[in-house]
Image 1 (cartoon, rainbow, N blue to C red):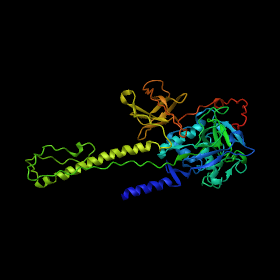
Image 2: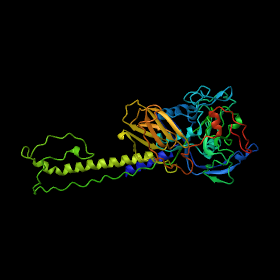
Image 3: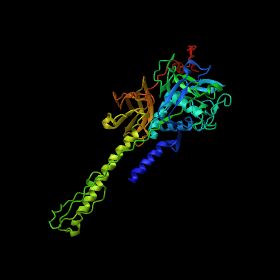
Image 4: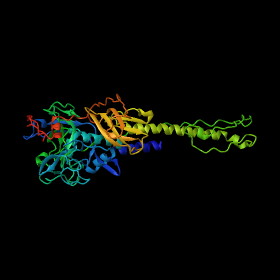
Amino acid sequence: MRSILLLIAFTVAAYAQQTIRLPLGGGVEMELVRVEPGKFTQGAGDSAALAGELQREVNLTRPFYIGKFPVTRGQFARFAAATNYRTESEKGVSGGFGWEGGKLVQKKQYTWRTPGFPQTDDHPVVMVDFADAKAFCAWLSRQAGRPVALPTEAQWEYAARGGGNAGEAWTAANSPTGTQPVGRQKANGFGLHDMLGNAWEWCEDWFAPYGSGSIADPVQTNANLSDKPRRVMRGGAFSRPVADASVAKRYRNDPGSRNADNGFRVIASAAAPVAAAVPAIVVPPAPTVNLEQPLPPRPAQPVLAQEIPGALNVPAAPSHSAAEMPEPESSRSGRGGFLFWGVLVAGAFIVWKVLKGLLRGIKASPVRDMPMPMQAPADVPAGNGGMFTIRIVQDGFWIRSRVPVGTTLQARWIGASSTHSRTLEYRPGPDGLFVFTGGQPSNVSVSVGENSGGGGILDTSGRSMDLGIAGGLLSNQRSTIDDDDDRRRNDVPPPPEKRFSGFPSAY
């Protein structure tokens, strides 16, 4: 009973803690601050407000954790190193839009590693598009053992308001040449830094006018309510005037935009972890031995411990026949003890297997109010006499092979709307070699050799799964890149933008 009470007290304390630290591996962590549920008036509500900023009453019914700081360059570097991830600006032929001469300029050299101004690991990561931010969230969800997502627009604004104390900002007035290390400015009333300025932050919502009337836990999932599908960005940036560093100011941007002032922060569920039910160890009583009755003859070849699946692997003692070594009388009375310990060991093994399965299930399964996609089934054997197996998961696939470490492989797969190819060096970990695709791939194939056109191709066609998730908080939807992004890739100047009356234009 005392153990149960201690477990309950520990769970309640963990549930109510005001900050948590999510491990990113390699000694890198991310601190998140708990924000309690509440009501607030969303929007500017003044003469400068645009149509999309009209006020409405919002009720957030669940607590959540939100990053104390924006995701930093050092944290994103940990993700990129662990997954071999390449951002859109790194994969494209045109690079990203770096900060040059006081404006955004597109060049191949500009990526999150080189945004056009010096950064350290403590600066907010920039030049990440919406899909890059979502890929980071999916990875951190697995790494930390709890679901992680981008904040909804309502969650972001509620957190930014800080209970009436919005904090301070880095803008073009005090930091015109680039970002600043996070945490240098005064925190807001919730203890959050850099909610305003430094770098724009992606939100989960598609941009659209606010609806009329009060609403609970809103998130805009309709992409077709603006002139073009745009994602919401909040907070202002070092590149923007002070007026943009506002808790209510709304901006919209192409989800494929990779600008030197685009960053993000994350949220995590505040739901308490569900404690696994531990099955009781049931040990049958040792049988009663009647010493007055003769024991049955002992078998000449006793069953050894290593012959019992899961038993301790104890070296066998030399066997003797009954004639060579008569059974002592004391061993007869100890038969019950031997049986007792044998049953205990077997029972412990069964409990260990059950607990191992439960722990795996807890690690892979979602916290209740922020669902995660299912993972694909077990490894899929593929060709070459079982030399290769491929396992498809929600954001990539694992390769296992008996080829020598260091072998060059060519992987191909179909993503959300196009075919992809990547040259890999086979250096597997304990679970094999992981290929990060940012979304559920299909028609995965692998061949030996760079750009190999034949031989050893491993096809797992038809293994894709429907990963649609309600609510949008952890959507696995891969954003499509629109015409503007295609023009950026080919360095074609865009035509004059069509002004959308009532809403801020994408910058």
